Length: 186
Image (cartoon, rainbow, N blue to C red):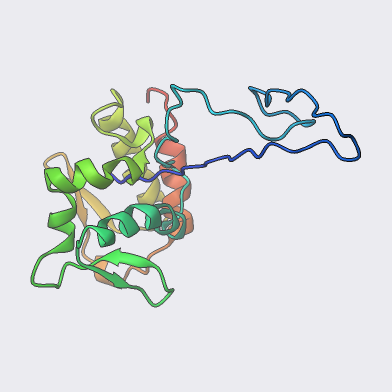
């Protein structure tokens, strides 16, 4: 469930002529850093593109969908099958003759658009969080405390007998995720 996106900004400067004066004024160099007095700045030669958006423990599903739009647009421009949701947002189309979800993960698409895919915050990333297993266990315990029918069998959390009656509760899920995946041990 790893995702990526980026924002590119370009600033253009136009040289102006001094008004009401026959002699040309010496051009001032544009500021190197944006400030309240001068909101524009000159991009450095080694400027790094904006980082992909980060999916935090408290990020809602709707926020994730908005974060994914630049990535999905790039994939669409590279002929990866997409569809438009009821909300008018792009999503990958897994029902097409070419599965968009599989195609998006292929190396050429990762190279072309991967920098735009949202990424998981370190505490949510199983590969980067040394406490992930404990956090995941705490997350599921919190859900159970909130009334979700989950049981632990052979070290794995699985749906309990009344699971099919459960209505999704994003508020509870986000609260438990933020509580459990807080970046601290235990």
